[in-house]
Length: 82
Image (cartoon, rainbow, N blue to C red; front, side, top):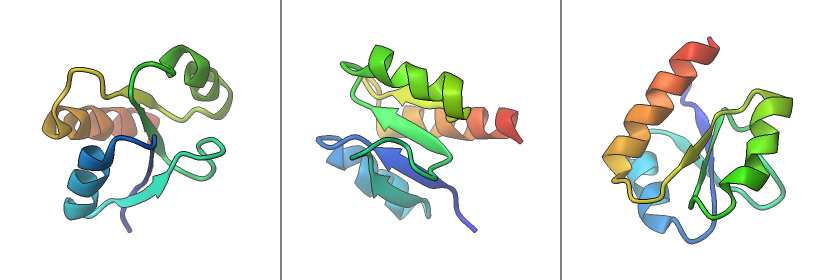
């Protein structure tokens, strides 16, 4: 079973890359929902950082990063939550 990753609108290149890697990618419309990690553009990171503390969902900034770097971060953070 693949991890569900919520990705902020506007990060289509990240959504496409994660989907190609076998992840279940959903839009981050009303919050993380049942996603195991969240990817944001970086502009809303402090706001969504609250979700990280209250739901234990890793919030990962995509700002200035390649999809490969984001995926590496997702894998590392998911390993820590297991």
